[in-house]
Length: 377
Image (cartoon, rainbow, N blue to C red; front, side, top):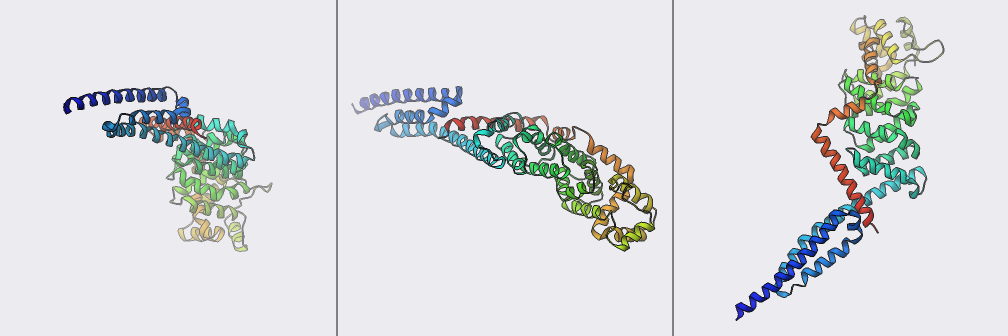
């Protein structure tokens, strides 16, 4: 008799369990079909699924609890991921709005651009937003950010394997130093990628060096391409990173003699780095003079001349210029001037599978973002 009663109870419980599972399946199907529908109703669906499972009775309580947990836990985790993604993105865009001096509601175009970049590139929407923060803090308005600065930042980051925020800082510093417009910002990414391709340095090394040297180079009338070419030449001599930038910066200040002894040495060796109109000669011309006037000297005399004119730190940069001469510098500068360097470098950096995986990751993050926006309070 007890056995018959137990079988009857189990049959009833199984029926209730089956009904609950069907309800849960319906809820999950709705989630898969519409992220927006999921976002607005997920709490209610999870609650109903849990209530149905828990109504099986005391004899099925354990089964109901396990089934409820297996269904609700993934949904809760998904919801948490979506909300976290949306919250992070919202915070980044709020920082962008503050930096450009506009209400958050007036940077929707930038928000849409970041989401678009997250869906179509190897970077996430939130990474794009963080890059916008750096660009905005650097003084760029929404038009400049969307007009080329963000694309240049993403190209530079992809070419050098940099974080987008770091690439944004580099773009800002270089654009400000050389007085480039947003439409010219791609030249920065191309120059650094070209210099890296032509030398022993990587994009990160060259970016650090350019940060140190850019302001003085611009004051001295040097171009972005000529400056990065000089840094590439120095890298091939083993002088890299901020060390190279500091050495080049100091060398540029010594093109006009800083002491009577330096002026005398420059006169003795026939060196003159100033044009008739008072402008500074290009670094290619400087390299040509150094090689032609000092290159044939004995090692001791050559070293003494460089130290007297440029000082102990800057003489390393001058020595690199002297070794490559005008012809060598022209080759480096041609490498830094070619358009599309950054795009080519980025493409070569990743194989098809890795690129596809990176782009998929960005698209998935964009999907969580969309869901999280709907779920957010």
